[in-house]
Length: 187
Image (cartoon, rainbow, N blue to C red):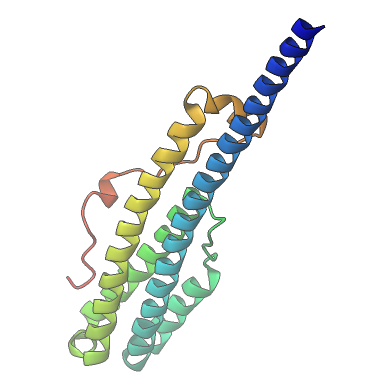
């Protein structure tokens, strides 16, 4: 009888320890996933600020070339909003639209030297450059956060809990030839 009680106690202690361990790992996975979402939220905030700076450029452009400014405005209205729930693909699509708008603005600025020399244009371009740098830094933070999260869900034994609760790997921002150098909008 005493042996059975001891065996039951040992089994109960092991079960309790496994449950506590499982809860601990689950909570760590949730915390790391939230860090990933927070990092994407930081990117979203920087992208929103970058688009706000672009709107200032559009207003400066409107004074010199109203018909081109309307085209830029339609690009900004067509873009999707990046949030903390957005994917890397969503951000990359937003960057494509942003790059297209900036290329159009640069073409207009070349055609209107007075626009390029205006204080509003120069200040707005400075703000765009500042936010572009912050987006790049936020992407690096995001990738670092994703690395930690992905590593945790792949390592034994936390991969068991990750699999049970459907934690999946997050995608990284990857370097491409177009992104290898910092864009210079003030060219």
